[in-house]
Image (cartoon, rainbow, N blue to C red):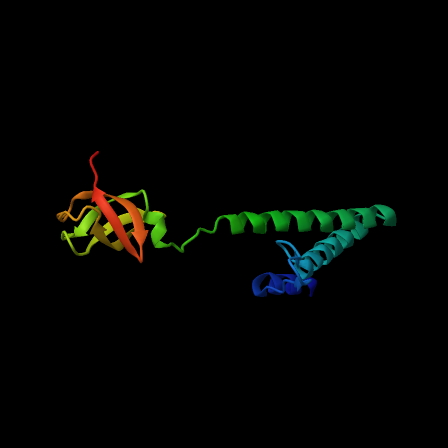
Length: 160
């Protein structure tokens, strides 16, 4: 029963977060109070049951059960933190293009806007662009993004 509750809590959340007012915020940690408690009880109870069948010493049985529960909480918490660290940031903003080189996708006229392609966070993004010194930049030209204002990049020709 406890193992089933543990699995359900891992899949469904059941994490506690307390707001104490002001600038303080108390979080139960990566695993959460409920998940930690269920993990401790499930693994500790299972280890205690195995020890009772293998040994007649009740003190040793309690120590092994408590230790197994604590170790299980530490291992599971470490594993979940490792999984959370593998998440990547998928959001981006236009200012991340500043200082990057790219290519003109749609010609940039002298006094208008075109479209450039710039790689941001490993993904090629299309951004509206205008020439900083109001010169025409042809399609396929290498450019350097100097600044971004109002979601329009200011670019110049990039000379390797």
